[in-house]
Length: 286
Image (cartoon, rainbow, N blue to C red; front, side):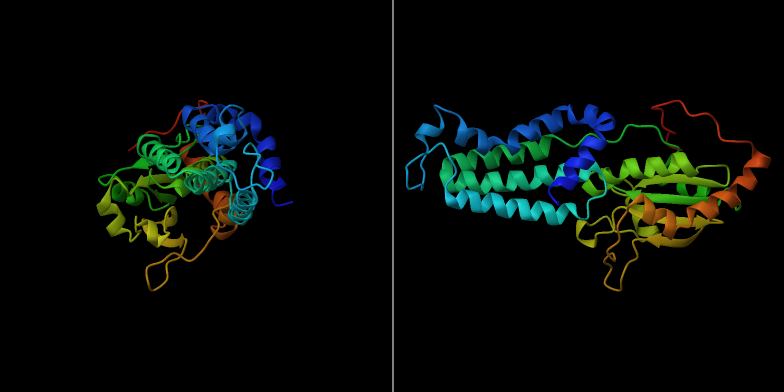
């Protein structure tokens, strides 16, 4: 059942995600993920490969290769239990497929292993997953604008995401956060983002570590009257984030968004309703 869950999620969201799946990053990742399978099963190539099978069939997996692939499946199942979005499911499959390919190629031939590992390193350094480009009601802050914007109107509640473009977790969370902004944004409840990978001073001031070891990315902070009220994930005394799942349901419950939205709509009556959103157009950085 755990293997079928990501498949069902993918098929359900296929109309929304097929465009980014066809982008060069994912197409190249797919080919790299099945590289060993292609080499082992392609006639004319597999005939020249070494094998430990008793029947000498070099075009089929030996028992050790099957063991490695089964172990990969178990790891993917465990990782995908905490995955939130389809992007995370697909990302986990791609990541651990590449790891398995490295092991399998090195076991088969050290030269092939080195070649594949080199390709993975080059790919990692030159290609990045496509960023979310869908509609959203989000303001992007810089180090010079975030303080003024949060303090501009004490009646406005802000939910701000502290993120970094290089973080896979932040990239996966982007669509979830955008969807929340579309549902709950109003004159008295606004959504913002600030890239602490770019603005280090913001990271220090608001005490959100950009280190991958801290597990603090992304961080959501609720501000009222320009002051922090709560944040998720929480941080322990050692500066490490307490494990927390960034699902839409968790955020709505923990930040009490339904009640906040109802209270904030009263401010909308005096300041006007939300402006109509043009599909695919973002709120620009302020």
